[in-house]
Image (cartoon, rainbow, N blue to C red; front, side, top):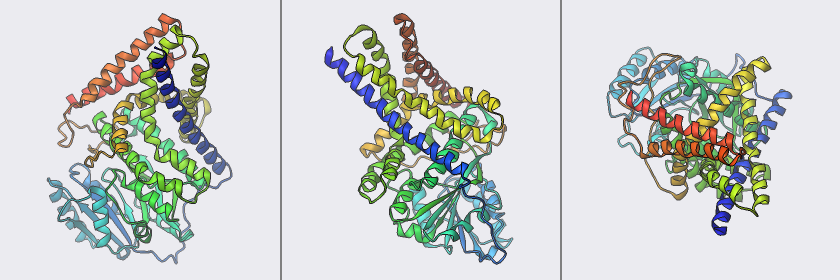
Amino acid sequence: MYWLELIVLTLYTGALSFIFLYSLSQLNLVYLFRKAKRKGLLPDEPQVPESYDHPMVTVQLPVYNELYVVERLIDAVAAFDWPKDRLEIQVLDDSNDETVQLIAAKVEEWQQKGLDIQQVRRPERKGFKAGALQYGIEISKGEYFAIFDADFVPEKDFLKKTVPHFEKDEKIGVVQSRWGHLNKEYSMLTRLQAFGLNTHFFVEQNGRSSGKHFLNFNGTAGVWRKSCILDAGGWKADTLTEDLDLSYRAQLKGWEIFYVSNTVAPAELPAAMGAIKSQQYRWTKGAAETSRKLLPKVLKAKLPIGTKFHATFHLLNSAIFICIVLTAFLSVPVLFIRNLSSGWQTLLNISTIFLLGYVFLVIFYWNGFKEEKQSFWQTLKDFVPQMFMLLSVFLGLSVHNAVAVMEGLIGKKTPFVRTPKFNITKKEGGWKGNKYFSRKINPLTMLEGFLSLYFIGGLGLAFYFNDFALLPFHILLSLGFLLVFYYTIRHTRHA
């Protein structure tokens, strides 16, 4: 029993320690962001003189079976306020359904209006999105490449607000904008996603940029310098996050990513739990694959220690889900150890201190949330329930994401799984009858349902032992797994 208790407490404390250190890195980003904002150091929109020599820009739209949203995307970029003779649009179409004909008709419509737009069809869909982007570069005219996924609807002045920033420094390889949300108010799930993404874009990206640390191109709604892409080795398909991979390879070569939070590109948030899981799987597994590939190079590079620290936790951020699963699952046995064993009080007290990591994460999200609010009390009133629900769903997705991370870390390869889009804006639309929505229930969903019962049992133990130290954690866990299980079943049944 002694050795079993030792193993449980060692794993539990070790996982909490990683969460604590990760949270410290996020807390430091809050400091860097607030400092830069207070000193007025966050970038403003560029002042473009009338004599500005507009460079040649290629807009790349990597598309695969986007029947419901591709036309609005093409119309949006075709309306860009940029000289027509300095603009090229590539619809990088790998589709194998009716999307092909829709794109052909839309492209012909804009060609007749004098726009340089092409439907690019590769002989072979090799390398998924990364392969399409690389193929497009090889037949392009542009000095710069603006990239948009199918769920985006950029404003017509997007290029005017981003491309001129390259004039500031020849080492700027990427200009990344902030994502907006077309359907934030559609449901609780879309509001929570907007909450999380806003914190990433307001606090995390601004913090990394202000601290001169490595940050990432977010895969879309940004502009690349062609020479940067080529110098870094081009787009690669050996990870599911080709954007993070190229971002780090470019920065290791000395290029910089310039982040502009005041330029916003609206996009559609996944509204169904199945779509959210698909996106989360790709993001978390891809980040793990990229850390496996590039973290050793980052640690060996001649970089400031602070940059290495932040890069380490940036590349390993998806590993936090493995730690969450460990701390969550072991928290119930820890309750027994706390109340039925003796001799472990020092270690248990240390582990309790590491629970502060979750407090640091709340501070991190608070700073992102309040950017969009005015009154302190109104902000607090809105923040508390949304933070509670965000943490619950975040914890509820931990097993699904932890599996993806493990696959990435051990090198198990899987295809690029696209996130289905539904053309949902504001509170309108749905996914009933959507041909891309998977109607299969992953066996992990059943495990999520079981875990909700497991942590409800943890709640009962708290009252049995009269030990409420882990009660808030178990409330979040039981609710989170229940919500993820419920929404997965409900959204699949109504597809």
